[in-house]
Amino acid sequence: MIQSKKIGRLKLMKYCLLSLTVVLSLPILIALFYNTFTSESLSILTFYSNLTKGLLEDFGLFTVLVILMSVCVWFIGGLTGKLIIEKNKPKFLVGFLTFFSLWILMFVFWTLLSAVKNSIIWGLSGFESVVSDWVFYGLFIFLILGVIHGLTMGYFYGNELNKMKRYQASIE
Image (cartoon, rainbow, N blue to C red; front, top):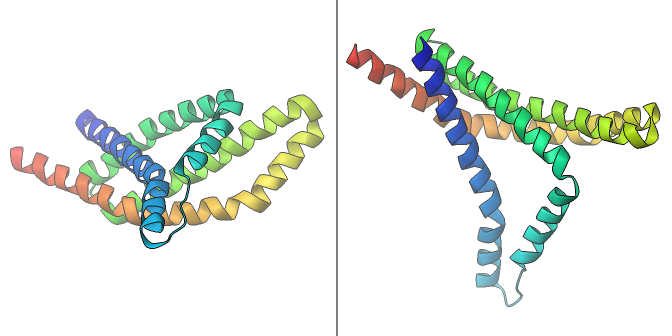
């Protein structure tokens, strides 16, 4: 049913944007708590200026990554909606695997995009260097973040799709 794919895509986009909002607001909350309980102050503007400076330096790379991840959300969200709503697969497992797979795909895309960018300047050795660096230094972090994100948001995402399944069953 096309409706289940559409629901899965919309809900996954909602939870991805919610996660992004939470992550970007964490420095504000940390600084507010820190400033409340200590006499020293933290500069929130420094964090966000460093963040935007890094994004603006590699704006093309970041734009391609956002487009690729949006396409992945579209495909994976449709598949997840179909699996939970139509096929009655376990909501928690499917929700977890949805977010975990998005983190793995983001790692692969970021690694390959950085490697291609570096290979333009340094050739094949630049490509190999970036891939090995990302695998050695980045893979573990992406796996940990993927597991944490999958366990937290995957639970709520699977529950919401399950509620939509029950709602559609009550209508029919």
